[in-house]
Length: 316
Image (cartoon, rainbow, N blue to C red):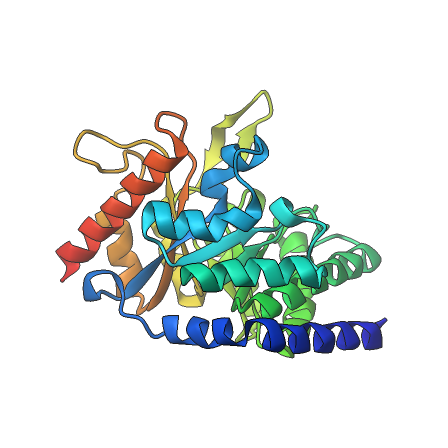
């Protein structure tokens, strides 16, 4: 099984160099670009911002890079695996995606991975299966020129039990991903992972350079109302949580939902939040993830981008 994976990755690498070598060079060059208004961060677009259009088949995953660049002026993208779930090992598909990135001058940053099992599953067998289910996404990320995959520290058990099993699963996946130079990052994505101190503790247990966090400004809800998913019954302070996760961050998710008349996000003080990000010493990519219902997806993305640009300008 392991030799088959090595053969697949070698085959993929050969095809990528032959078909899209120039794109790879452009991707590396894009990584050295200056941040927004000369600031400490660059802006990317998370594909989830367009999930309604994607689920409605109004937009296809292959069209995402061009839309990011042409409609929003964003040159870095973050994919969601469920929008090309069966294509992780389809070299023809991945080559077409790379070609469209090259044609539009777009850089691939990460793949958000869901639905591949619980990294922190209680049994060793289930945990190992979930870890191995993510291998193909590590390889696809490498092939697409991404630096990172985002996973979930999910599982069942007490706070202490899940911390132990999640750390074990993340260590194993990080060990595999390190061989291809890919980072594995965990988002505060519900359950105990939305407790900043818990997830920071898991990172300390894992203690791998290529395993880190993806602080999401708006995902600090530990427990939701089963009858109404949007109602949080046990939350965690988003500013405290972000501060706790930033020492391990290899990316940041700028979640947005509702904006006021001045263009500020009503749930998160972006000026306060981005100061926390900057003060941590972070220099990297901040991904727009609009999830609101009031504005259209396109308008929500534009509002979030404008807000990040305003914040960057205020920071000098």
